[in-house]
Image (cartoon, rainbow, N blue to C red; front, side, top):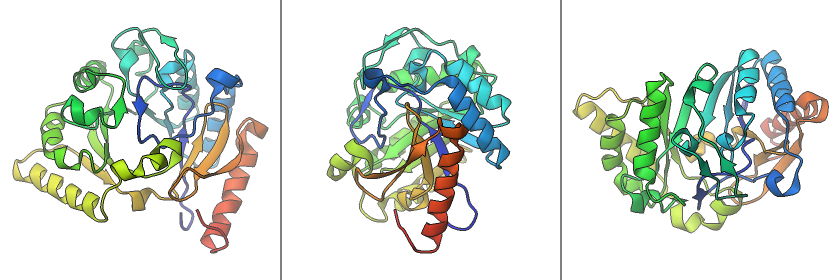
Length: 301
C-alpha cells in the first residue's frame, strides 16, 4: 500500500460456509465453536466509523454471510451509513433450505433475495470451472455446483440485483477459462472478476503447490480472455485482479471481530485488534500507523 490509498475492508463476519474451499485464504474466528460472534450493532458501528473517515465501500463475506440470520439487519445498517456493499456469498441459501458444511454445521433457511436487494450494490457469486470436476477441485461439497451457481445468478437477476461472477484462477482451471467465458457470456452479469490464486491463510498456503500459477500466466490468461471478448464483439466486463495488484491491500475482520492483514505468502498474519474496542477506532489507528511504517520501509508484510 502506498501513498494515501486505503485498504479494502472485508467483513468476513459469516461464521460457516456451504462449501469447503481447498485453497481458502481466510482465518475463521471460530465463533460457532468458541462463542463470541460479533454483533450486528458492533459491525454497523464500525461501518459508521469507516464512513466518517472517508471509506465508501465494504465487502461482506465469510465463511458465508448467509449463515447469519441477522444479515439483513447488518446490510441495512451499513447501507444507512452511506457505504456501498459488495456481498460475497456462495449463495446456496438463495435456492433452498440448506446447511453449512465448513466450520460448523448450521441449518440455514432459504433466503429471499428481496430482503437484501435494497442494500447491496452487487453480489459476488463464485464459480471456478466450466464443469463440476474442475469447479470442485477448488470448492468441495456441492456436486451440482456449476448448475446451482447459474441458477443463483438468474434468481438474483430476477430481483434486479447486480451480480459479479467471481473466479479464483489457479493452475487447475486456467486452461478452462475459454469454456468459462462461454458460460459467463450467457449469464445476466454486471461483470466477471478473476482473482489470481494467492497462497495465503491456513488452507491456501498448505495447498499452494496445487494451485499456484507460474509467473506471468495469469496476465497472459487475461490478455487471451479480453482478446476473445473483443473478437466476438461481446460486451462482457472482465476484470482481472493479479496477486501482485492485491498484495498488501486488505484489512480483514473475522466473525469474532478480530482485524487482521495477511503477512506475505503463507499462513501467518498480523493481528491488528478487535473492532469491538471503541467502535474500531483502535484498529484504524493501528493500521494507519502500520501503513505509515510500511511506506517508510520500517516494516513489511
